[in-house]
Image (cartoon, rainbow, N blue to C red; front, side):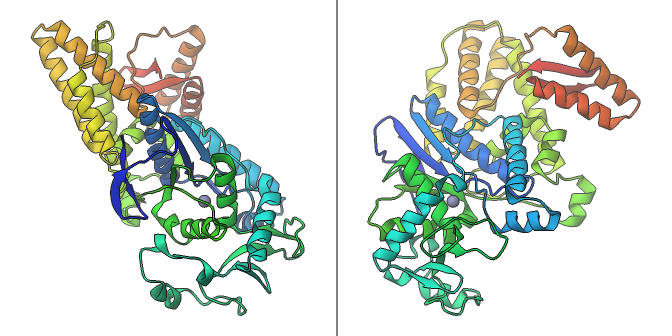
Length: 449
Ligand SMILES: [Zn+2]
């Protein structure tokens, strides 16, 4: 069974499932007030690889990831642009899903909106208040963290240092600097729902705990997100569950960030600004490969340079897929066992992808030497591993229909006349129709994704 690093214990340990053969996973989703950045791409790819790998091993995955559609940032943007909050949230949610589709990640089994759960959130805050664990301050209802057993587990540092380090809050009637808001009272003009404490909206930490418990139930398997969510967000979610005597996540998984190169470097290398910018300029599989070649708990750098190297590696994979497309046969079991060992060792995708490329090299060598049977079993294993990682291979066996050919020609003409906007538009349409678009010295080449 999969062994994963667990933030709560600080150890790599076996994922002890609540129910055999099933994994329930909550990934903290986006607050929809701006375009997704490159780090969002890494996040969704990391958990997409985890999910696809588990599914490849025969495990059923229930993957919940929320949309935070009420939030200070959304309110501020709406105010700045003279629009309704719901309008801002709807716009950037649409951008989010579009980017995720283009990235090739599976949509979550459920993607609840925070605003659909407000009544449940009010009920949870009421119960915390009834138990004497929450109190009313001038601007909202707060959880009194000193009354929660073991508060600070995911902070990984003593509470005293957190208390003294907590920034000076505008709210003077908080009992401790670490107490956090469960319910925010609305200021005039802000989106608001009725509650026993007057009109207001839920706090972010309350949103995720309510939605995860509702859709996955107590004691669900994995709660995950970026390292920055560990504290206070995840700890505060956990604290509410503990305060209510509910069993929360069994395993905490956190991934590292994408490192952004310095300003000077970013200009000279033409680095990517947003996820959309990256998807406009790079084969989506190259970004997935780049993510796979970094361990999820290590920072990674995304530049044109690293993406370019990944694209070269992909070209080798595609070439191999074309070369071996007609070979049938059983996958090499020894190789697949090594692959599983790597993946189950805290999702060691750098080791798993290294195995993949070694297998490609070995298979090419035996094929050159005329051993078709051996090459076929290695090729079948390569195809299987790629499926497990969500890496699509372009075997180039698909026919290009006339409409598609017309788009390809339009793109080539646009490129020749350096009309980049038209060339990009043609490429976007091809990608939207499920083609992988490749630039070659002979012009645009398309293959089925
Ligand atoms: Zn969350």
